[in-house]
Length: 534
Image (cartoon, rainbow, N blue to C red; front, side, top):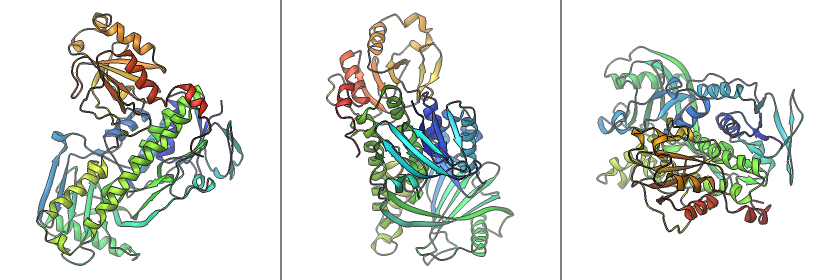
């Protein structure tokens, strides 16, 4: 079968190619550029727990080698500390790294993949679809025709793929603008990120705003200053003045020594593509959505797009088209991003409106701080990873379903499990292989070798039920899982989202849940073939 064509070699496109390769699906990545990324320390990304784990799994590189896990978070208003978070106690520390470092790690991993072909200097100009595949033409020094089974546009906000498919991209332009500087300096908060609203040295006017400081490796910091609305030119002189003023304000004296490494202006747009699928063509990342106001991270959502789409394309590639499963990509991911954009649009007038009653209502400052903290730390409606509770792949009305601390459709907790070969691994290490995961909660199994309990109690019956599932599945055992009683059985999708939790071994319920999570029985998929997303 023909490979998947991926247009765009940014972090999302490279992630999708690696995720497909891990599931034995070949791909061709069309890179418009020369295959090398410019080093820009003022262009960084913040990854949260699930996306950082995805990067570690795909690149094989410990995330601590790529960036800095924040030791803590502090938010201030004028001179008052509004909130402090110590990640050594709270966990879930965001990971901050330069985007070119992330892309470099992905490219290095990609170079070792026999199933991925990276083609540089290739600009897409034509897409032709047929019932059995997609043909794409590129121009440039390596211009030619490429034949694929599917095509995914990961080619950014000005996506050629989206334009060629005539997909609208409505939204808002320049929702926020930030002046950005990367510099090496000693700040009073080592490895701790800071959000400073209305700093006392800028007490009035539209530029009073807020400043964010986020640490990078080797004593480097990225500083962002929220700019007032408009298109005023940000000159080098203005940036240097902001740097000196800010450092002096934070250290309480003269400007301390610093080395300015990079500068820029970051403009945030909010847009959402009307469709994310057109037959055999899909959109992912910035080609499908733009977001990022109030500290949220658009790349996080792009990486989640790739993780969601990879296992569905892999299943269709290996076992034939399954329209309901492929349609679920748009149903799940677009709904999550749309909800994130709605939450940001509702919060923006409160946080950026300024003046009026909002400035004197008791408690409003803390409420505003909580909203901003959620965005920056990946929590709440602004930042938390989405759950696919209303997905068409979510089973309904299972008799044996029981609640656990992970809601159906949400990402599972990363507990220690015993694998089928008897080794102890983390649950997230088993994701992304194309198989369903069936997890039995069995206290006490961790202290005995697997051979002593694999044929005892309910294990033989559960193993038989797993073997009978409509798709390959791996049986894992954990001593405990948050909120789960002994003998609870969890069914987990290949991308790590919980399908259901069942009380004990219930083969019929387990089979039904697995079948629904795969988009329904094959006969139904064939009957509906060609009906989706046209």
